[in-house]
Image (tube, rainbow, N blue to C red; front, side, top):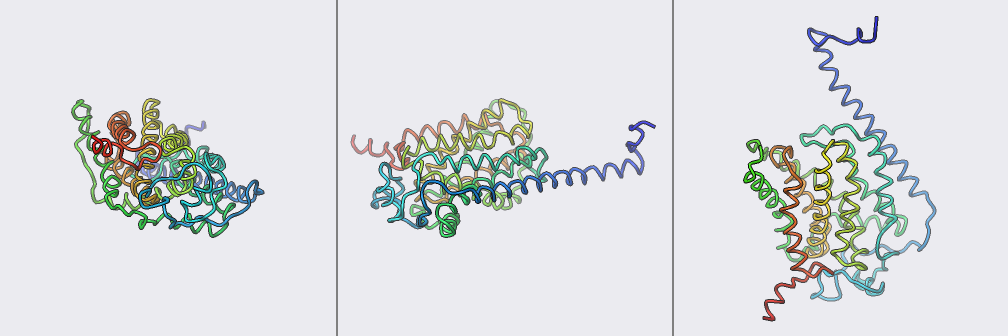
Length: 358
């Protein structure tokens, strides 16, 4: 008897058993992948913590409630130039050991992503189409925690995690408007463009009752990412390079970290390219909101979460989302931000000053 004879027939009781067993097998395989990935992640984290420290000694953690600038007029403006000025912007806290590209953080994010890339080919059991490797969203906060602990100890970790709820930094509450409304508007315009182009789209079936659950889930995921990308990496980079270049560089790093999950999700090459460009544009907008909202990681997280909810609710469950169309809608927004605000800080609205001079 050949091996094929062991296969269960597709009809009758045996077929029903097979159809009921297959989903359980898929869930089991996915669970094994996730367990191996998380185990490898834990080993990599412990190994990173165990490595001997090099360079600067451990210093006191920066205050999470430190003022943003030298004065009220400078609110939201990151300091540039020498380290002593950077220290003043943090209320006297010592400057970061390195100003500029946080290579240790970026390399650790990449290293922690490898287990997910190797073992995360299955699908997550959620309505939107995401592979297991999408769980790499935890890597930025893990990497930031490891590097912060090695430099500042437990007090540094506490200061870092307090920033996840630093909503009191948002002095100008108007900045909640772009955080909450900008990306829903971009998605509505994207859908309208696709309708005008007569794309074959289904009738929208938006499960609004799931929106709060999506928002809660994406707030958790967004906090894990933004504590790393924004809370840890953004300020040292923009003190040396300025806000716009920081947004571009971090956007590219963020794009690379999401490249393999896109491939595992079997997206076309064109889709991946345009989505990666969307990621860079989105990071520039996150830096813009972050700086103007009092350098609030909470505001950046909220902006990030609303973006993901808008995608998940795009008809239907994100199934007809087109990153090319969304990028074409987002690009003028980014252009307006770059043209209207000082690229060094993305906080001073230059167009208003130009009108006053006239």
